[in-house]
Length: 110
Image (tube, rainbow, N blue to C red; front, side, top):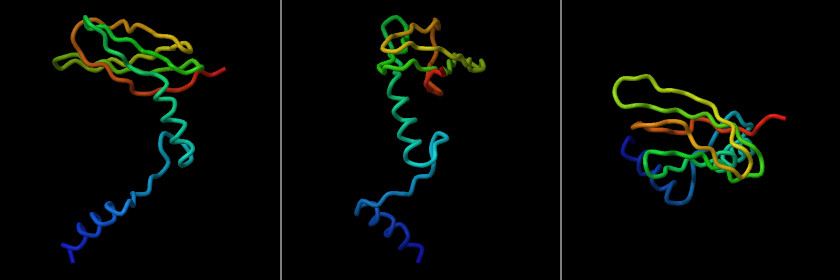
């Protein structure tokens, strides 16, 4: 019986069945997930030459972006929040080696 479970699972995936998704990003199902994904695609983290990074907002609404910056070694990560105006870019103030990633994106209030 244990050998049949992977076979059934593989057959289900081959037929186009997908695992049911629950609410994502605090939404109430598929609509909430779609809104969260659309907001994440509004802002992109663009890496430029010389260890410079820019947040680029392609939407017509300002976005609040939470960024995590980790440095090499055992230092704790630095979390900062930036407001990126509509259809605009924002140069991140981080200098030197390290990794930057977006942790959260949401529309401005008001």
